[in-house]
Image: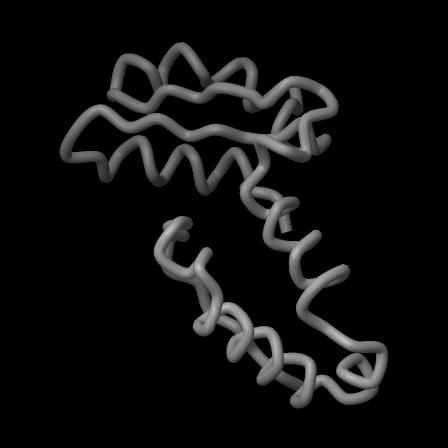
Length: 111
């Protein structure tokens, strides 16, 4: 799910230091409202930059997804949500990439 302008707005009010956010070109990220707020966010210390239009090699999520899809997972891993989740986490923790990437905290829910 793309980061929304309201999440960026809230972030801009909670900053303790200069912060850079790099976004892809998802419609929510390049929306008019986001563009209109960038100046205000910069005054608060939030700098928003964009990846080039097609640059999966620069997008950490795309790199991780490519590894999962083509190297780490087998077709049978997709049969059940629980199995897929466990395989993804296990492969991630055992990989050399585990210490390479840093992600903001997030919550994962399983239905």
